[in-house]
Length: 287
Image 1 (spheres, rainbow, N blue to C red):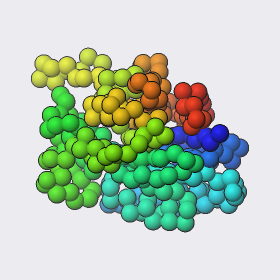
Image 2 (image 1 turned 60 degrees about the vertical axis):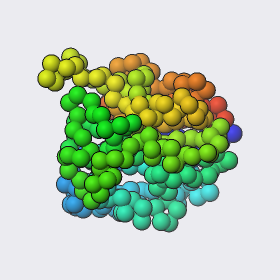
Image 3 (image 1 turned 180 degrees about the vertical axis):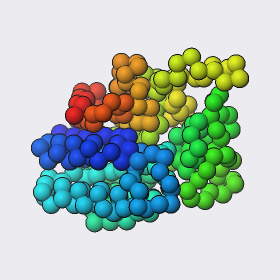
Image 4 (image 1 turned 120 degrees about the horizontal axis):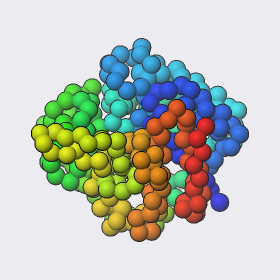
């Protein structure tokens, strides 16, 4: 039975990556899935010398994944990755070229076949209160939640057209990506979780903006509706680190679809082990 390991939101923390490499050496899966926010947050988007920048990709990540591949040989997992909203798009090309020797495949807005399953990747999240907007999209319309900043404002490390900033939505992107695809053996690597579930609960407390309470659910309506309507086998998410601690759940079913948020707000690395034939039997390990 093919199995996968899912990790997400490592945020450039070398100790988490080193824990991952050590775990993979002793427990290699068939497939490794990395769900975005790979780099250090709040770094200067054009500075390759800072931790998390292109030197981090071409140096630390390429070096350590190469070492892992050499040590595992034929047991080296098929590795599929996406970026997240804290990853400047400026570094996307370094990430793509870094995987050129078979270390990983970057699958944003792509479909990849592996172990008889279809894997899809998608980086974008709905608007947040944060300033970096490279990987933010309007969700199902040009509405933004209280306290958030629109994709038309903020800053970008890479240019985007006015049309893209103003009119593109997560809903339309997902529709274009999946079209008439059969999804009974499909796995989706989303950075954003589905809206109003156990997987997108944020620690907003009693926050109020202009006398309006801030929504404690931080996920995507478009992603929730897509799961509900199309019922893929498995969807994987991150982005909201504290959700599992607040809701008590890191896995939830929407119809037949198993949905997992692998993010973690502690110092440990959260490792999700997934038997792809029965993803509801997945296990979570903090290391």
